[in-house]
Amino acid sequence: MQPSATLGMTAAAKNLKAAGHSVIGLSAGEPDFDTPAPVAEAGIGAIRNGQTRYTNNPGMPELRKAIARKLLVENGLEYDPEQIICSNGAKQSVALAISVLCQDGDEVLIPAPYWVSYPEMVRFAGGIPVFIPTSVDSNYLLAAKDLEAAITAKTRILILCSPSNPTGSVYSQSQLEELAAVLRKHPDVFVISDEIYEHIVYDAKHCSIASFEGMKDQTITVNGFSKAYAMTGWRLGYFAARKDIVRAADMLQGQMTSAPSTIAQVAGVAALGLDHAVIQSMVDQFRKRRDMVVHSLRQIPDVKCPLPEGAFYVFPDVGAYIGGKTTSGRSINNSTDLCMYILEEHGVALVPGEAFGEDRGMRISYAASDEDLVEACKRIHAAFSGIVRVRK
Image (cartoon, rainbow, N blue to C red; front, side, top):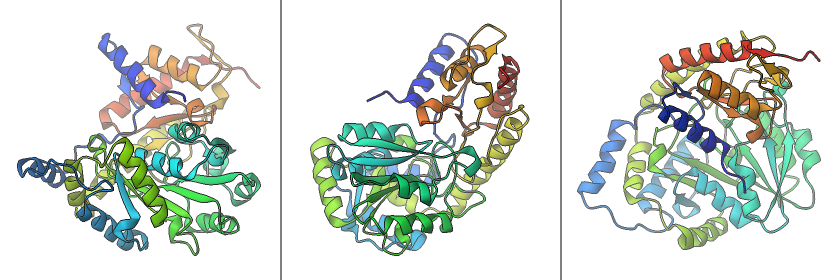
């Protein structure tokens, strides 16, 4: 397994800050908003009321019932609470699903660019990650024909992330139906649908692939509380699936971590009862930041930057600058060189696209204050202006 490039870049930025340098961190995938007050108060109340003991391993019944209601009302998915398991973040939920479905030598299809942890989780489970490239011209979305071509007798899982980390791309209903039509022909292939950014959408509508005809039993729907409810540190996620899959995950979780924090679970119940206007106010601010960052990046010569429809990332194609050299004498041989140059000489922490399986790109998180984003964009422009490109 490889260390997380996101965590690595965040640590490098913190080290530079500690040494007295001015660094703006746009590498972490974390909302800069506080957890909504009613949710925080529910957690505080849990402590004061003595709700500090273990819960049932798959999660407290009240929370699983609330999640089941949410899935029915918001996603059109009918699950019993026994078909839901709560874990220490959506990250653990994805890892559990991969671990219980993937055997040694199984192939797991991962569209690229991908979230950095997917292939490492697959390798840990003994599987073989198989990457399906997408392009900036298709907004980094997987085409049905490419999915069909990638499936073999060894294929066990497709990992789908919409809205996407790192690109912010969102699959439309028609695009998901095309993928579902392929998957229905391969009932032994499961879909792990990572929907953690579900509520952070702008110019699109989120759809769950499990809601399409014949796909529910074939899909593990993963979600959580970190992004929409600004609850990253509470560590609470879940997945919904067939009972046999949930039972297997329950057994594995019981031997590894047991249930997630009781306090976080109580807060999770409160979050699911929150007025969506609270979430929308955060999304509205993210939209303004997205528009500003994308507009700024598009002013850089030969940088291609699609307009993300969800999440809080942009993933520009900066391939025109790979192979160049900075005026300070640094060679830019790949996206890691580029991001280290921008960090060390211009004080902005980004994540290289190489870590996401697309070396022509880099991930920029706009989950930061307006002031920081304005200054970061100035610094990024200065960084690109300092690269002498090799004309191809």
